[in-house]
Length: 361
Image (cartoon, rainbow, N blue to C red; front, side, top):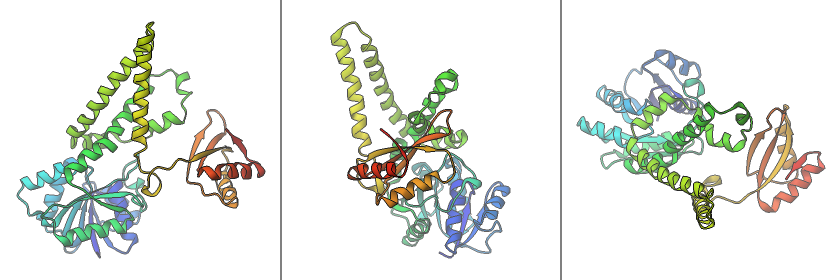
């Protein structure tokens, strides 16, 4: 791939353009808002000048509701040898294109499984896709050359290709992406009118659950409008579980011991199923999730503290598998939770204490 045209210079389009430009591909940028294309160009994502002739690959990075039209326009104008989109929904755009009776041999649907709460070119980065799955949904009509161009794009962006059927993809993202967004927003909405004293008690749990609730509502309306059925199906199952959980909680208030015991069993079953589902989420490097020990260290909010604690862990010969920070309310301090292999936890705790760190249980 020597040349590419990125149509749509939001977070995903600009990030892909930055990755391609950084690997020596001549990237041309286009957007319905010329100012966004100029911003992306100023960031080093390419040029907002139109290409002089057909490019090797056109990457359509517009909202799902506009994907099919943008693709059809680009294909009708003969802008590239191959065309792909990066919309988060795959079945709908493909069916819209099929309804237009276009030759789709030069097209392949794709979806990089990465993003941020922020949108727009200023939020973009060439490393956005590093190590992340990038779904490809070829059909029997997809030309081999176009599939190879898509695989080259994925490789240049540092992502991991995953081949799926388009409708299977849409059902999957309804479960692992779209429903979590709505549930996060629903929980965060409870905080809007909450008493200030309650909000001040927010800890890491509520921060984890509501992190993605900061996403752009307009963007998510576009996404959910393109995949409403599968998302509604998942939410219907969640709603049924919620109804059962509410009944179990009410039973715990009963004066009848048998009813209380039944309520406790119902809550335990929900939590057990949650344990089993969580255990299926891939762990480090996509392997089965590992069971790590947590070494919690009190850390001040000062420059260089994280670097120092990592250096001390390295000095002890312990690999940090994962890390989280829980900030203390009203204090310039927090807890750094260092996840390590169980056999390394005691060694790391002792080594950090020796170097003056305060270890918390």
